[in-house]
Image (cartoon, rainbow over all chains, first blue to last red; front, side, top):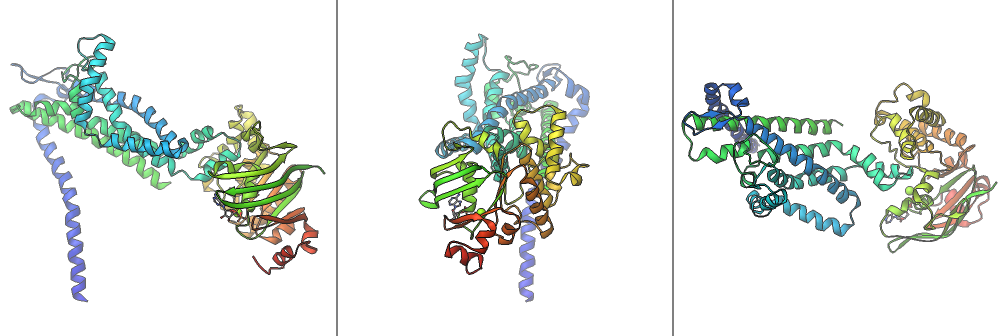
Length: 288
Length: 251
Ligand SMILES: Nc1ncnc2c1ncn2[C@@H]1O[C@H](COP(=O)(O)OP(=O)(O)O)[C@@H](O)[C@H]1O
Ligand SMILES: [Mg+2]
């Protein structure tokens, strides 16, 4: 009896330790980012750092303003959401409610595949097709631009938006839809007036997940956005928060390197904010 | 009294299993017809055929005729949404939408194009009054309907069905999930509603059928064994199987 209890306790402890590994990693990363991100901000000045429009990290008289990166990340993500959410949302409604079984199976497999493609491949295809396409279509000297990044991001966030929305839509009780149909509403009216409102928290979650994925993406956008620290414009080359860190890290030192950590800290705060939003939706869902 | 709905040689298959076997019945206008019979005998199936809710189930095949006001409801020219508007339905399990009480009732009229606020207010109040639930909810029309009790939810669903002004109301065991007090309220309500509406109600409770229905139809294994005046059917059944069922010898 005692032996058994001892074993129970040991197993309990082991599991606790395994669980603490995750928590430990999060804590470690957070603490490390804060500690290594703050010195540069102190030296440069918070206001100058966040709202400075010029990033010239290796100039003789360097200037570390990351407003171009912040705005690029925000515009890029917003653009991806504006394009990706409607496409993803209507696809999800179609697949969850209207599509014939076989079409649904094929399209869902395609969506899963899309989710599994590594981001470097998105970047590659974007570089070889999208960038020259934009250059020719809009007759600009270089197609590597915010627009190219937005399109790539929009495609990249589609799978999570579609999948999470489908799950939410399929969880809507059939009784609601039957009630609507029995009142003389058409199927399409029923989906949009009853099913979608009933699934709205899930769909909101899908959108927030998409935001998180878009803002954290580095590789693909680095390959198609030109990677120049301009203030963002749709057809101009731009640099994102993620790519700002990744691009210069390998050869940076001193204040420049510290500033890169500060950028990472800003990105981290953005993602924390998104997670908090996500938790808000999930919690509200549970309470219902 | 004229017949508002009739079924002729109605057969229905779910895939290869036949659930309705040549059903013939007439439903007189402004009366209550009760459908009784053991579980799985096809009562719900028959009911759902009358407003074509079976269309939603894949693999359903139907032969024979059902007519509503003289037109065959399976005719390609029939708009199924119009039909369902005229032939409303109340389900076994109360299924209010997860919206406010007001929006639940206004859902049907809005769907059919009524936007005027004052008009909607009138429709909502009348429907709730007709369903005998107005006094209980008039002070919380903006509250979520899921906060109501089961019996209230079911009367709300009746009100929701009434709000689109149907001619026929199909009710599939509307009291089976309710307590005795809620049940008797719904029975009283059905008796009031028959002045204006034709009601077809599935019940597995024979007393309920006796209490409220004018006509009763007895189903067994997909067959409509017999139907007719409720008093007559329970006192002098024509068929041996009906007699066995109502005297409790099986089912
Ligand atoms: N969607 C369905 N698919 C296949 N078979 C069904 C379906 N609905 C009902 N059935 C079958 O049809 C028969 C009649 O069912 P139902 O009409 O629900 O009976 P009742 O309402 O009298 O209990 C049963 O044998 C049942 O198993
Ligand atoms: Mg049934």
